[in-house]
Image (cartoon, rainbow, N blue to C red):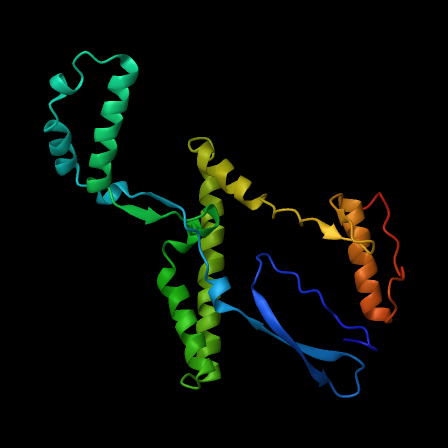
Length: 236
C-alpha cells in the first residue's frame, strides 16, 4: 500500500494459493506499508487426480491365468467381429482391474532432472540442514558450509551432464535435443483480465495495458492514470 492506494492483486500460478491479506504497518519512515498474507498449504500441495496403470507392479502370471480360464470357443461362437471384440475387451478389462494396480499420474514438470539422480542425498541433506537451522538446532556456519558444498556439487553435475551430451551428440541425438527442448520450454500465457469497463481482454497488448493501468494506480494513488506507455514494438 502507498498513499492510500491498496494493492489488491497477488499473481499466482494456481487459484486459492493465498488468502487473508492484512496490512502490517510501514517500514520506518517509508510511505509503503507491509502486506501479510497466508500461503494455503492444502492448495499448494494439491496434485493431479489422474491415475495411470502401474505396469511395474503387474502380476502377469495371474493376468494370463484369468484370461486362460475364459472358454473363448463358447464365448465367441456365432459372434461377429464387433461382438467378439466387445466380449474380449470386457474380459481383458476385468483381468486388468485385478492384476494391474493404478498409481497417480505425475506431470512432466515433476520429473527429476538428469543431474539430480546422483545428488539426491546432497539435496536432501541441505534441506535437513535448513530445517535444523530454522529450528535453532544447527549453527549458521554449519548450514552455510552445507549449502555451499551442495551448490558446488550441483553446478559440477550440471556441467558434466552438458559436456557428456555435447560429446555424445553424434551417437545420442535424442537425449541431446530433449535436453535442449527442456531448456527452451516457456510457461503458459496469462489468462484473460478484466479492464476498467468490466470487459475481459485476451490480447497480449490489451492485457499489458490493463496491468500497466493497475500498477500505475498503485504507485500514484490515482484511479487509472498512465505513467508508462506500452508500444507495439515491445515483445510481451
